[in-house]
Image (tube, rainbow, N blue to C red; front, side, top):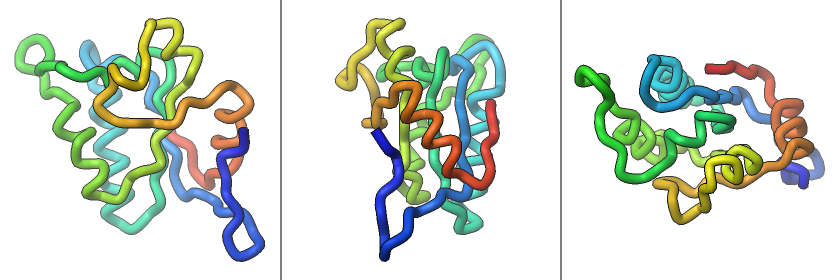
Length: 130
């Protein structure tokens, strides 16, 4: 399933793809990746997010702040729309591994298999992994 759509006879190319692979608690990687997404969007860059592996757990509804008052990621995730970050993708295999369905998530990312993820990565100028 190709990620890109044709516009004016040529395919669109994204500026920044952030691959979020860490769980919402236990480290700051996920929060830092989301912060980079917001900064990029604030500077008028096209930002896409791909949640892979444990990163899909960040999308589960009903989460609270982490241990020792660690800042939660749900407020940041809810701000994505305000920053016009709507290119959201999730690794379908990770969703299956954790027994998740779209109704379990606070956002509605597009599920991608391996070929779709490879296509997504290939069509971005900058790919950052967190």
